Image (tube, rainbow, N blue to C red; front, side, top):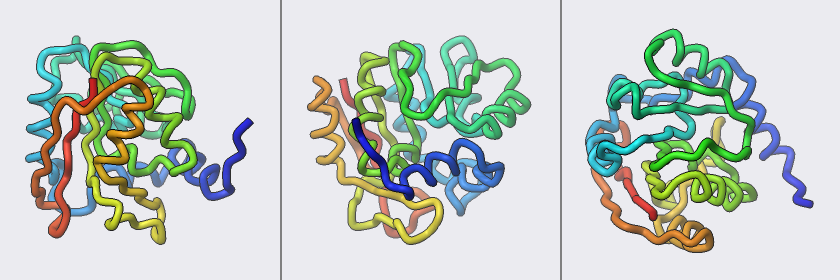
Length: 195
C-alpha cells in the first residue's frame, strides 16, 4: 500500500475543497485565453472526437467544443458548480481524486498534470491511459521551471518524463509541439499527444 506525504495530501485537499481554487484555474496573465496558441493546437489534435477534459475547472474550454462531444470532470465541486452555472448545455461531473475516469475517445488536460505530485503522477497517467484511446497533455514541459515553493506548487516535467510514463501504460507519443504564449514570457507550452 502506498503512503503519501502530508504535502501531497494537502495539495489534493486544496484542489478538492478550497473555494479559492477558482483563483488558480486560469494562468495569471493575459485574460481568459492567455494560452490561445497552445489551445489552437489542442483543438486541432482533438478534432471531432468525443473528448473528456480532465481537470476542467470552471469549464473555460467547454465552449471551444460541441456540447454533444464534450464532458468536463474535476475533483473540485466549487469548480464544477461554476462550470454548470456558466455552461448549462455542457456535461460536467465531480470525480474522486485518482479514481477511474469515464471511458471516452480522447482525454485531455490543460495545465493539470503539473499539479499532480511526483508520488502520484504514475497513478494519474495510468488512469488517463486506461480511459481513452488518445491522451493529450498541454502544459509547460520543462523540469527546470518547476515552482514548488509557492502555493499551489507546479511540478513541471520534461516531455521525456511523460513519454516514459505513458510508455509504461502501453502508449507512445504521436506528436508534440511547443509554442510561445503570452502568459509565460520565458517558457513554452507543449501540447503532446499519446496513443
